[in-house]
Image (cartoon, rainbow, N blue to C red; front, top):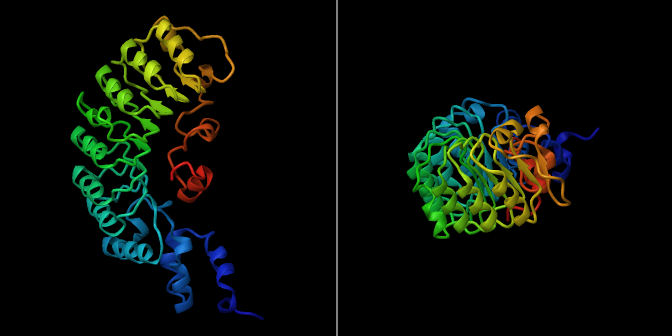
Amino acid sequence: MSSWGSLPLDVLLQILSYLEQADLVTCIAPVCKWWHECAYHAQLWRFMSCGSLATDPWSIGLPGFANLLVRVSNSGYLEQIDLQGAYGVSNDVVCAIARHVPRLRRLNLSHCTLVTDAGIGALVKQCKSLRVLLVRSLPLTPSCITMILKTQPHLQFLDAAYIAMDNSTFEPLAKGSCPQLQHLCLSGCKLQDVVIDDITQGCPRLAYLSVKGCPALTDGALYDMATRLLHLRVVDLRGNLRFTSVIASMIVERCKDLLYVLYQHQDLMNAGVYPIEYNEGWKFATEAVVSGEVDLESSHTLHNALAPPIPRDAMRWAEERGDFFT
């Protein structure tokens, strides 16, 4: 009977690809020299995901994590790291990523609440090729978001939801700092109209915009969206009560690629905005949003048409997206 050691490399790698990456490090690599080499093969480490480990990445400590980054980045092209919800991730971990994976293209740090301006500063200083960055709910300052926008000209996807912003935070966008930006999630950021003015001036390719929970926005902000963001496909206006029906109609009429305008039906009814009749090419998601049938941040229906959900499985996310982020 053939032994595991006699398996062709491609067959063994296919089998190992079904394992969690943490298992590759802690269970497979120590078995023998051959399996150790296979466990760190570049084919298995194009994407790195923290998976279900929610404290210390890989449970191997910072030195071990740094050594792992060195090893997998040297053996191939590590382009994506997903650490969402890993509450043990600190600035030291982010600095290690910046130091050892400068060609990183996608990073998810959502809900890693120990990461501050210092860690993000080190990251954007070293990693100049970021296409996708998620920093949702991090304790960052407005100046840190400004620094991201100034230093990442290739950025296509930014999720900075639930971070405090001021009126000057997005000024770099108005000057064209991120001309390729297509997905921008600013839910719960308490934005003012002047911020939308900056965003719409410098991001004509935006296809996804969430300003959910920004009740200070007025018709002026929606007018800027309608007249400048002509490629919008999904816009989330839930929790904004100050828009009127005339401007709400304009965004539908001007944005020919529009698929969804998400809002809470009662909110807009209170503000005098009523559902518009269905037209080919777009639809209003109203009652479905209220009932929970549609969720802008996880619905496959919406994101297959436009942009990925917040990535929870890094490899599946990249496979589903195909060539969207290149």
